[in-house]
Length: 260
Ligand SMILES: Nc1ncnc2c1ncn2[C@@H]1O[C@H](COP(=O)(O)OP(=O)(O)O)[C@@H](O)[C@H]1O
Ligand SMILES: [Mg+2]
Image (cartoon, helix red, strand yellow):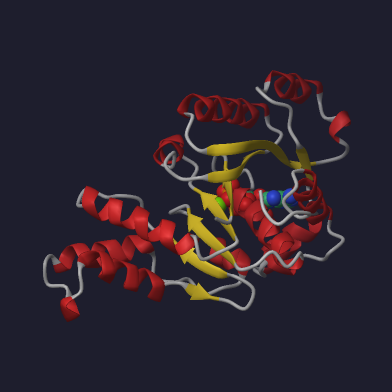
């Protein structure tokens, strides 16, 4: 089994940017084969990675559902879904990319979901590293408890309200138990030194269930790329946000080992 890294937090805190920096760091360190999964239906991970938007898994599921029992070529439904998902994989030079698309809608079948879970588990087992950019909602996280996650990064910006949210997410994850082996709180978009953060922010940080393991600086280089609509993978090697993410991966042993 490879190493799975997942990114969570509420909307707008910097999850997708952080995921892109993670992917860049893994690719730079030669940690491949790597699969990037966009599991946020409102997301744009493909844009920050500079890859085409593939047909999503949600789409495959919907199309298969509409076919009913008319699966072409005498294939089983299982096999057909597997084949279609393989076909929707965007294969890049440094990593592959899969988009989950919409979460379950009213017409969704549990059977299809079980098949999906299996197919995705099989697919991800072909990779040494899997990075998942998750949806903001907590219910989404609770649905993911079946999956093995080696490192979950819970991201927040420094606003006290956001910090209270990650506190709750972290507690929820503890209650769920599940298969999340390591959790890391990350404060993103930090201006100045962490120790110089406003009193109100320090107070919220002190209340978190675990101390943050990384402070990712507010980074003009990242904002610049974003404004130009360029992929964040192009971020310069000496960009402050990228250095912070690399240091975090190093600290938790992802960059300097063969795996977990
Ligand atoms: N380290 C950072 N420095 C400056 N701006 C950032 C940083 N990380 C994220 N942002 C900006 O914050 C906004 C939200 O980021 P995004 O990664 O899309 O969040 P999410 O995926 O959580 O919704 C974007 O405009 C992005 O450019
Ligand atoms: Mg996002």
